[in-house]
Length: 236
Ligand code: UDP
Image (cartoon, rainbow, N blue to C red):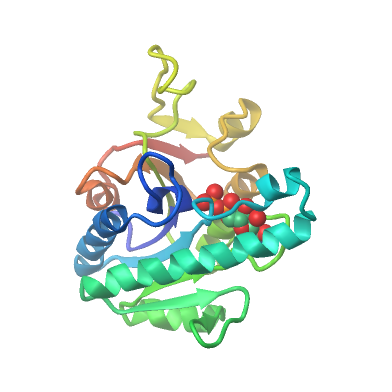
C-alpha cells in the first residue's frame, strides 16, 4: 500500500442523483461506501471531507440575492446532511465512523477537535469531516487541503465523475487531453479549475500531493491507494 492515510474529498454532486447532481442518491453513496470499506479493511486510514453542492452552494444563492455569509452558513449545514448520509452508508457496510463538524451540532455529531480526529483514525474509524472550515467564504476543497495537512494524511484524493484533469471539458471537446501529471503551478497558472486557489496554494505550500480520479468505477479507490497510476497526480 502506497498511502497509509488518505483524505478523500467527495463533492456533494457525487452523492446526488446522476442526472441532476441534486439530492441524495443511495446507489451512488453505496458505491462510494463499498470502495471506502475495501481500503479501510486493507489497513488504510480514511478521513473524508464532504461538500454540499447537491443541496446548496453559498456563492450561487448569493448571486440570487441572499447575503453571502448567510448563504455560506446554509451551505455548511448542507455538508453536515451529506456527512450524516455518508456515515449511515459506511455503517451499513459494517465500518465504524465518526462525523466531526466544524460547526457544533451536538445532537448529531461531535465537534471537530484535531486530537480526537487523530485518535479515531488510529482506532480504524472513518472520520467524516463536515461543515467545511466552519467559516464563510471558503469551500470544502480548502477544508480538504487544510484537514489533510492537519491530520497528517499522505495524499488528498479528489473524487470526480471523470477520469482526471483534462485540458478542456471532455463532455464538450472530443480532443480534450487527460493529464497524467501536473505541477501545482500548472494548475494555478493555467486556471485548470481542479480546486479553488486557496486549496491548491495550501497543498503547494505544504507539499501535499493531490490525485484527481474517477471514484465511480468500482475498485478505483483501492487502485489509487495501492499506488497504481490512475487519474491525474498533482505535485511539485
Ligand atoms: N462553505 C463555507 N465554508 C467552508 C466550506 C463550505 O462557507 O469552509 C459553504 C459554501 O457556501 C459552499 C458550501 O458550503 O458553497 C458547500 O460546499 P462546497 O461548495 O465546497 O461543496 P461541493 O462543491 O464540494 O459539493
